[in-house]
Length: 81
Image 1: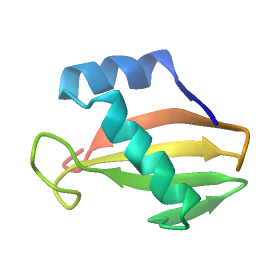
Image 2 (image 1 turned 90 degrees about the vertical axis):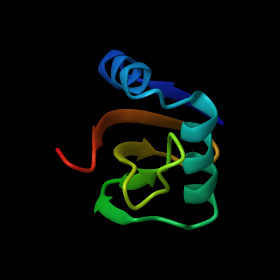
Image 3 (image 1 turned 135 degrees about the horizontal axis):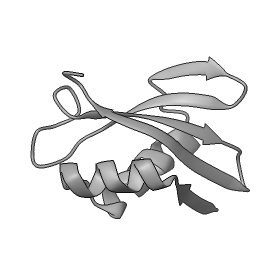
């Protein structure tokens, strides 16, 4: 699987100190069927834990996803936004 981040998601992840391994974990969970929200058209909303906060108070991401091919992080935001 190839995983991509848009420039804005990359900048947001750096600012929020979200590591690539934390983003990769979210992709692995989607592959296992653990999805927070299916927005249709292979676009999913997925919670990401970071900075020892856990998923509930962590960040949210939108991922365009295609099984066994590619995944694109297209948007990320903190829970309080």
